[in-house]
Image (cartoon, rainbow, N blue to C red; front, side):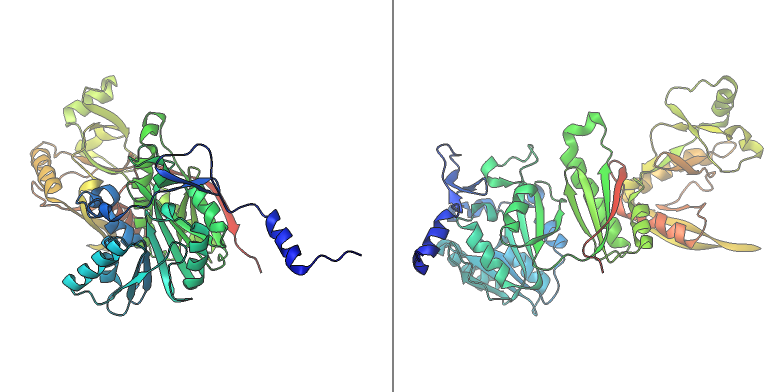
Length: 477
């Protein structure tokens, strides 16, 4: 029997493994012609890019404030800003984690490190530590970091596998990695293609080092925040929602999606659903509720099942409504809307059934700055619940201008309150002046009033959500 030396056997096995990186004959001039898992690595931004990092337009174009809020930093977190650059994110996050937390600003370029140290000294920042890493090792403490964030950085790493292997080792148990990358899926993002990354590609590269997907946050104008973790995924319920975007608005799909996700997260946060994760996968929003019960699932479905578009629209004067009842001709500027279950009588008899409403709203939900459930006493009856709302200055002015007109009508004018096109109530205007303080009655109890208030104060979805899937995920006992 022929024996192969151990060293030679190892070399033979290693030679059979495909190379981790490759080059190609054709490549993007903005890339370095080094490919990893089918993606070309981009050139690194040097110190000459500091004005770009610090540009005033960055807040509008990338919304870093919202990005940091989405990370839900805690006061004692240790956060590594890998590829910190001039410290744009590092110093903002330092204020969030406070004196008990630390920001580890990692850079490999001496000029960037000098700029970081200069700004730390000038601003007297005490909770930011500068770390000089290398192209294949960020030099982070092992199992010592709660969150590692890379903002427009990962796609430029010369050795992504080696860096992410080190990153995984540096995470505490249950730690997170957040890659903030320009969306490759969105053709309207005005960034060179090699500097964008798709969610699918990010997932492929994180899986190569054993990091698991947690969620993808899509509330930023140009980027997505892909969050991964080193822990096992908890079991729970997953709901799949699709945005009902009409054909004539498909060109604005990403803009609509970003706005919708912002509202979805506001509602879930306001309802106290703290442990959820939300990701957009191939046009379907996957909402994961770890450890959820069927009741938790029903609550989430109710929260997201309404677009929540609120309108206050004036009803036609009585003579116009009476003529419509007789000839069924809708006059210009009005629309016939089913009145619903509201009871009417007396002078308002003609307003039964379909009611003529002005097409143009007096005010809409976007002008609401506050909403809460409120109990109102009723003489001789059990108290009833209403939703008390407060309007912004423009909304208050517009409503009072219309209220003055309706109050002078005989009979007193009606104003319809609609939610998603359905009439909730059509009260007669009882005063010429409201100063931005209104009430919506017709609630069946405290729970319904509280739900309505939450929907109104968190804003309307740009288009409705349709539930397409509901399933269990994660390990089973």
